Length: 139
Image 1: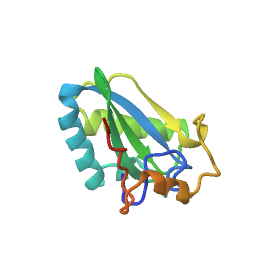
Image 2 (image 1 turned 90 degrees about the vertical axis):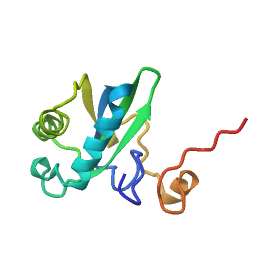
Image 3 (image 1 turned 180 degrees about the vertical axis):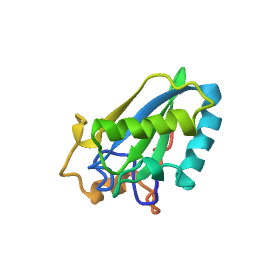
Image 4 (image 1 turned 45 degrees about the horizontal axis):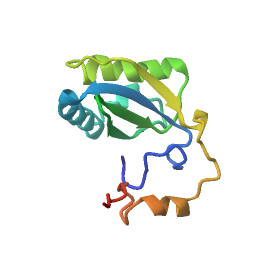
């Protein structure tokens, strides 16, 4: 994620946006992650984003059998724009990989969206630099 933006629906930079959810086999995630990071850093999404939109970041969540990747954008878009972004991801950025089912979820459409969320609440789950750090495991 960009510095200062957290991967939560209520973050002010995400609240009017959304995220694509894609799944990949665990043995492909290193290459998929590398290609997505390079695409974001290299502004490879620029040609398919409407004015004012941006890729706020990407996240990965390792599951038992696969990895869930989320691509977060600043502005939730109408269906044609959403399709343009995911078509670019599948046909250009990740063309070497099999992309299974995927979907887009607007942040404000999420059941847990809280428009009254405040940055003070965010401080409980972020480090001093604003990056997310999971709680440490204690035995």
